[in-house]
Image 1: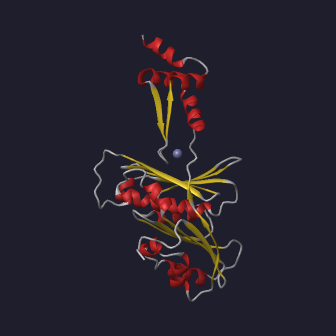
Image 2: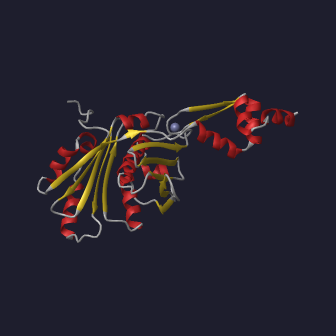
Length: 298
Ligand SMILES: [Zn+2]
């Protein structure tokens, strides 16, 4: 078996401990991650961080109590401006990054240096129906997993341990969380997280859930609760791009089409391309905005 072929890739496995009130999640992404990661020419360090953030979004969204999506963003002030990953309650995800593409990036540069000072970690919950909710903390830690655990600790959520890894082909992650409203012996939590800390990136990337769990916790009673497939999906659409153009306004859109002949919007997540020509934008705005722009230019 080649090391790159995970037996059960692109799925999330839920488990719990029978001897300790702790639940867990493990996820392996392969096709999904390659689809996201090969969309742009990401520099190595950004590619790895984006893979880890994608896995993090999938892990966190698997516990959503509503229909909708969860978005995690890491915002930087350095070469790296933003990493964003979104996962939905229907087990789909998408992700992208924005950075200074003109910068020369050292092969060995780390995530903290790429992000610069004063970055933010932002988590948004976006129900399909209802108000969205956002939590923001300053970035702390030198990896996506540590930034996320810092966020969880700062926002007083249940004690959570997270481990993440990504390379060109695979992205994997692992989460342990204390169950709510249950007494837990600190010793038990300390022992489980100490065991979890021994996970190597290679194991997160290449082992399926049962092998990984046996390797780590064979002295505990672990119960597998089931698996679900994870898929890539983008929520961009002609209608959403139309709304965005309407927000830009007839003057700006008319001017662009008068100059270029059409206006082209690329989705940053899936690279779908939406082209609106003169007839399209005039129909959208219900008036001849292109002719108006031409007249104003003369
Ligand atoms: Zn898209």
